[in-house]
Image (cartoon, rainbow, N blue to C red; front, side):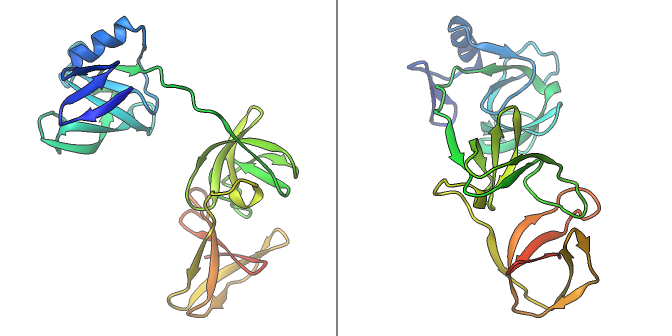
Length: 239
């Protein structure tokens, strides 16, 4: 629907435009949805005065961080909250700077599905933390079960939907080609790791420099936040 044309112009619904007011008029005529909260892919019309009435700048929402903060890609921008910086940059923005969000009627993409080649588990986050349990197991699936693929995180995990459950599963469980795989890493200097086996943690042991391991995930929350969960052959460790 939209494509870039120079620093400030867009083709919108087949027309070349260069102002936020024009975008809002076209969107209103086409009965697109105006929203108070953002979603990835929304257009955002800014009013940096904080009055939520003017339309002085426009961006494309690329990520929603929380209820008040989101990321965008914008033209004619710089390193401040205001426009006319002369660059195309990724910005972090806040709801207080917004007039409105506009949700274009994007063409629906065909849903991609995958079947499990072995039993697997859908987790709350894109990592497994069997000792700390900071990534809750949401749903256990059987070989042959199908899931809807939402996004591959690039590190061996994908966000999927199974029934009413949305979470993350290891790509190695899925039959779809082209998905990312776990990274293979090498220990640069001797390091201590903590073995995990039979649902128990064991005393630390030393891994020699040059040892290769599979990076299953990095722990993002809980007691083991910042540690990596790795595999060497069939053994598992926290590092």
